[in-house]
Length: 211
Image 1 (spheres, helix red, strand yellow):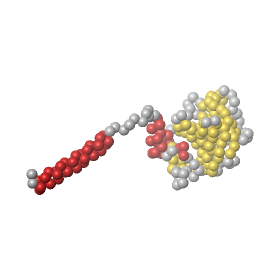
Image 2 (tube, one colour; image 1 turned 90 degrees about the horizontal axis):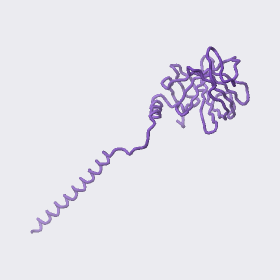
Image 3 (spheres, one colour; image 1 turned 90 degrees about the vertical axis):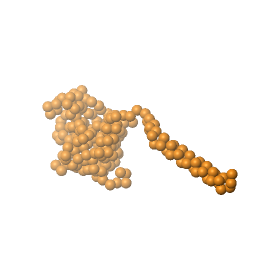
Image 4 (tube, helix red, strand yellow; image 1 turned 180 degrees about the vertical axis):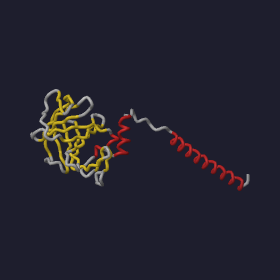
């Protein structure tokens, strides 16, 4: 075997080795691409629906003063927000700027699913909470829940930055709501509530560092 032939064989062997390495790398990459994703455990379909709605219509849990909320085609500015805590349970209420001067607010809570309620103040109401049921404005409301909580206030709410609230909520058979709230031991404020479908609420958040 002459020298040039030996060199040729060594060169061919080297090319074969390099080709083998390239084929192996491609095979490993393809196997990774084709490998199915690892299971992540049970998925809550209702949570996925809520996340999709939040991505499309804005997340109500992140509402803050200065945001714009469109409810059933009517736009409101968020003037102030109240964040409540009763034990481990938390919820929020956001005071809306109503052009007609009517006090309205939207409550946001998860129990466990997201629940949105539009509230309107009932001025001059003489009813008080405590009874198992209340007849008011053509409906009979049954006692739903009551208790007390602490709150923190941001923006314009007419309340101190921190305080306490007593509440008593009632619900009618058609899901209409009646709420009684007393801040810091003051008299009862009465509100009539309408449950909102997620598709009825569109949120436009303003630019903030917390966004």
